[in-house]
Length: 84
Image (cartoon, rainbow, N blue to C red; front, side, top):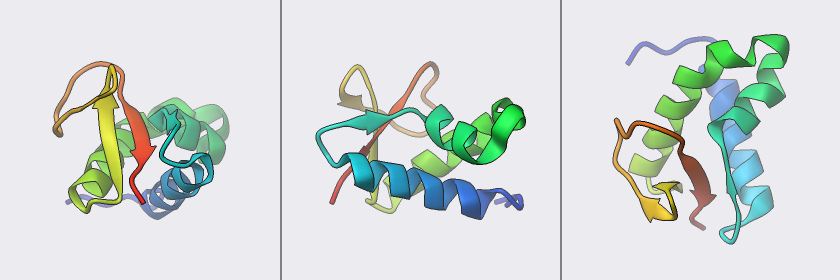
């Protein structure tokens, strides 16, 4: 895994937002990217998606499309939902 300096911040922000919203609501990876990336948030999107799937693999969150869980590599818009 090629970890970038922003990875830790993205991971923490995804978890913070997901926990704050709870299991009844979701977030887009762009929510975390915008929160820490400012005007350069789009550059963080590939990492935000990758980290979302890593967190799903750890059982911390679910990654969904149209309300259904999806596996890493899913194309198109995804949502992140707090598991615990």
